[in-house]
Length: 453
Image (cartoon, rainbow, N blue to C red; front, side):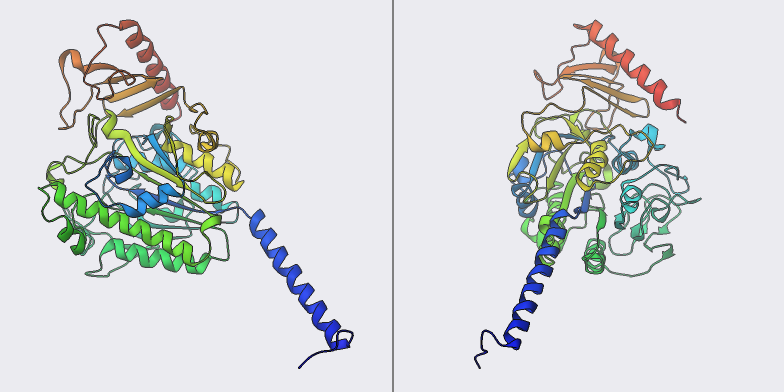
C-alpha cells in the first residue's frame, strides 16, 4: 500500500528512519573510537622456525601463515628466558624475569610470581576490560599466587608445568597430581582433550564478552610434551621419522586451535577490533620426554634451556586488520617484554607506577625502517647468562642443543650474529675488550635487578 508523501504516517516513518540512521552511525563511530579487544596466544616449546612461513616447509601451519598474512610476522623476536615460568612472567609483566620475581621455573610447591607484580590483565582490568586465562599458568598457585590473584576474572586450565592431555595429571615427578581447575576449584573432566577444552572455554568467554572490552590470554600447553597430537595429524605425518613425526602432529594441532580462535572472532564480527598476538615461550625441547628433539631451528644453535639463538628466538605475529600493516615482515630485534607497553599504547590503558623493561613495538610494527627499541638486552638462567648489544652477543656458561654446558675456552662465548648466525665461531679471544665491556654491562644490570628483591 502506498503512503502519501505528506501524510502524518509518512512523516512519522521518515523521522523513525532518520533516528535509526543516527543510532547506527553513533554505534559505528563509538565502535571506531572504542579500544580494541586483546587476544594473546602463547605456544609452549614451539621451535624457532617451526612454521611454514619461517622455513619449516614440511609442516602444515596454514592458520599461523594466514594470521601472518593479515598482520606482521617477526623474524628476530626473542623470549626473555629459555624456560617456561620466567618466560611467562616476563610476558605478563613487561619486566625481566629477575625483576618479576621469577628467575627460574616454578616447582609444585613454590610460591611463584609475587602478588605485587602488575600483569597485562591487571593493567587492562583497570581500563574496564573483562579478563580471562584459558590454558597453562605455571607461575605459582600457593599463598595467593594464582591467576585470580593477578588480574584475571576467570581461569580454566592447569597451574603447573605440563599435564597429560586426557587425564589432566602431572605425573612425571612425584607426587602425581591432578591439575585441572575452574577458577579456584578443582575440575574433573576425564578423557577430555585439553586443547579442545580450551577452545570450548575460549568460545564461552568470547560469547559472554563480545559486547564488552575483553582480554583473553590463551597460553597453550602444546607442542610441549607429552606429544599427544590429534589423530588426523598423526596420520598425515605418519611417514615422517621419529621424533619429527610426533612433534609435527602436535604443531599442526596447535595451528588448528589458533585457526579456531581466529574463526570465532570472525564469526562474532570482532576481527577488525581485536588485537591478536601470537608467540612461543622459547625454543623446542630436546628432553627425553620429547624423544630428544623434533623441533626445527635451521641454522640456529641451541634449544630450550639454551641462550644460544634457538633457545630464545621464537615465532611471533601481531595482527589487527584495518589498523596494523598486513602481510609484512619485520626483522628488527624485539622481545616478549615489549608486548605489555605495546598493548598499553594500542588500547590506551595506563601503565602502572611499576617500571617496565619493555618498549612499545608500534614504531617497528608500522615501519620496517624503524630502529629496534633495545640497544642492549640481557638474559640470565641459573649460571648461564647472555648480553646482546647490536650484533654482538656474549654467552657465558652456555648450554648447547644437547643441554650440556660448554667448558674451557668456550665457557665464555662471544659471537657476531651479522657474521655467524649459527654461533659456531667464538670471537672471545680475538675481542677481549668487547668481552670485558659486555661483562661489565651484565654485572651492572644484575646488581640493579637484584637490588629490587
